Image (cartoon, rainbow, N blue to C red; front, side, top):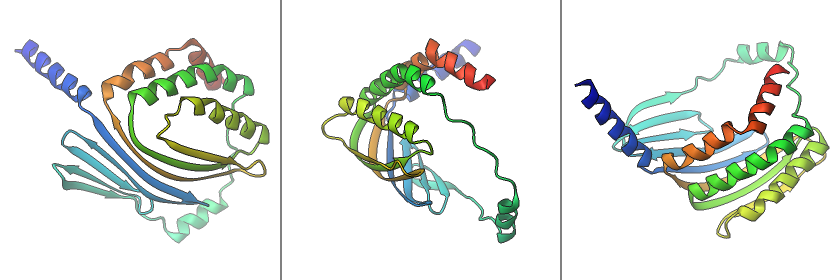
Length: 204
């Protein structure tokens, strides 16, 4: 009896892994304001999250069953948060770590791009890091992966070396088969360079 249950569960798990997932994103960020939505559809389940209202809705067969919304913080809480000492953010990764991870990361991105069925992509990004040197490294990385982009994708970016900034305008529709991303992710996580860098960052 237990063996039959395991076989049935394994069958449903395999069917779920082979069922495509459709993801849609429509988002903009200007200054500190993020607007738009994220939607996720898989088999009979759907999830829609709106960034501005910070509201999520879970649906089954197209009917909403759960709606979750973040409660707005009170003015007293915001003022108390301002009075708290600002913690220093963690140091940026060393340039050596970034270069050592570039190979496995490029391979992962390439494999994921060909695993995901990008039905539509239009991205415009403006970015700048606190350290202009790291901004240059990131710009070089983006240029290096531009060669693996498909011709029907529209991805544009511009760089600001004078300040730390991140703004975007994103529209994308992606179809994913879960089983196709398991192997690339496992290969990336178990890569020696990734493991070595991760352990070094944990120790630091």
